[in-house]
Length: 443
Image (cartoon, rainbow, N blue to C red; front, side, top):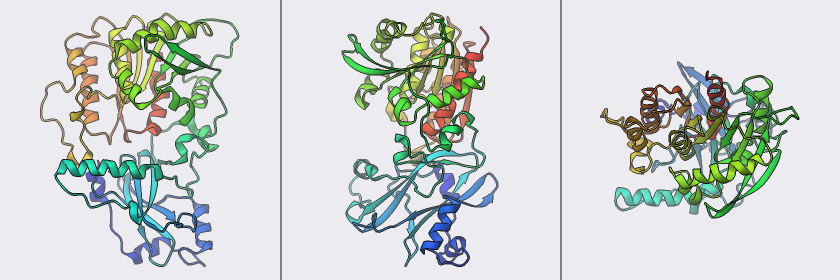
């Protein structure tokens, strides 16, 4: 994906850029011009070439952000630019102006977040030395140092600055991107949540030797206690606080896309604990079944029907969700798995985009795929929704391989590839679509 896009990117002369940016009765970069650009909104969509559209990104150097003399402005567009590249994508400055610009050709169906990263001379991407592996290590260290400087696009009218995700990222939804109708109201008010969790609990787990938050939310309007579908959402802190999912769940329930349900969002705590618990960890799921679900049942009726019990997870969470259903199908009968980390436990399978090449073998690609091929899950009939982004390279091969193995066991399964990368802005729509599918499957 990255190679194809970079080949399609057009280099334009400065005179061409000035022509693209010119507006009547003003000069490029003056106050009137910036006012016009702000009224139009960025990025600017330019020429169309088949399924691609040329997109022009703009960033303004102001006295505030020029306080320490900005030397470069890097851009990170999820799944479009490759921040693993030793030559990271960056904007160019129109000499004599405060205008910085970047152009790329992007698929008309693409969706993803992007950030600007302005840096001073001391923070510019360094010249790496040593072996190829040593240079990769130096590059990762540099990325860690500049990513905290990421900022959103203040000129984009579709920013989500009212939620944590939108503080340093901006959504890019190309004209023909897959619709996310249940998120439209949330987007129109810049990511400000109207709906919130009904309860926030603290789960003290003996098995996991720790405490974390749970966010409980019911989309039922009835005051009668009755068993409703139960949905466990992994990485719950993100979906409760950074890009809150409550408004979209409410909207999807109101329009009949989803049934009334009880949602339990489980805090991921931190990166280390997330890696430990979501990497096919039986203790974590024993704790969920013997501690978490009884705790939830003190506040809401908890269904015992596995077909009405779904797990939603992304990346490592997607792997964990699939692991739980395959190993305890009598409790968890439905899964929404998004960009599942089926490479686990062999991270060497994951390569930077520039090093990706499609597998040249028909052998099973992952440990979980081999287990399914060997019979894991064959005694159940699960309702499964799997998706992965078109910009995720080996993750597509791994997900398709898993889907094929699961389909051979006659599970009810929908598999799709969306136009995007490893990106929560894409997954948020898949949460709704996936739950709609797994809960609409016939018993």
